[in-house]
Amino acid sequence: MTVPVIIGIAGGTGSGKTTVAQKVVEKIDHSKITVIEHDSYYKDQSHISFEERLKTNYDHPFAFDTDLLLDHLTKLRAGQSIQRPVYSFKSHTRLKESVIVESKKIIILEGILILEDKKIRDLMDIKVYVDTDADVRIIRRVIRDIKERERTLDSVVDQYLSVVRPMHLQFVEPSKKHADIIIPEGGENKVAIDILAAKIVSLVNNH
Image 1 (cartoon, rainbow, N blue to C red):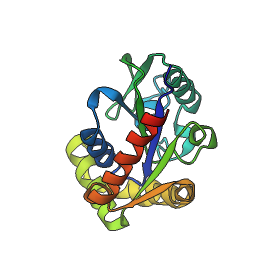
Image 2 (spheres, one colour; image 1 turned 180 degrees about the vertical axis):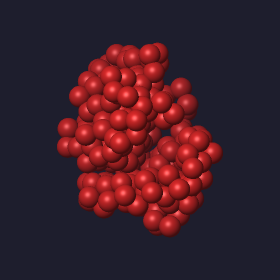
Image 3 (tube, one colour; image 1 turned 135 degrees about the horizontal axis):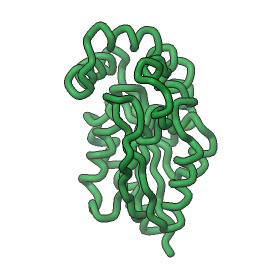
Image 4 (cartoon, rainbow, N blue to C red; image 1 turned 180 degrees about the horizontal axis):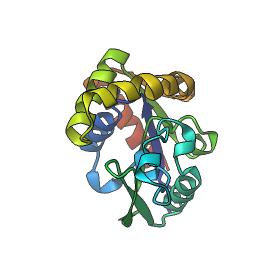
């Protein structure tokens, strides 16, 4: 059996991680790639009230079910399928349903904190950090949270200043030192994306 290649794409909120992942997928055969978002692995909070869920620090490593993610990555690497959880940003907890994800030749894991945990890093063949200026990232975050997650401007700004920025400085930014490749300006960096896609194909061919 060919062991899948696991690519980790990290970076701060609004850095362009998802865009980089999408553009890499566009350059490689879609049938060979599975993309997993770290956000899907936020811990289940159905046992606490909605008001309590609002107080959770979602930018801290403790907010994620790392054991489940590690189990799923290990299974995918062994050629097995998984039942990926589905997380709702409106109710701030997991939904009852899950999604079947098949193991493929290339597995892309993207999220702000995926390079922070050594156990997760050790499963990766390529570690990528998308490095984008803070002013660009906060603007993207504001637009996304208002449009897609039905937040108010005041709540987004308050969360950014009180939680997102401190956690970025404490956990996300320091994880950049673990990256094999740093991509400035995210999805706009076509040369870096071309190089990354070529490296992934090379790894797949040599596995």
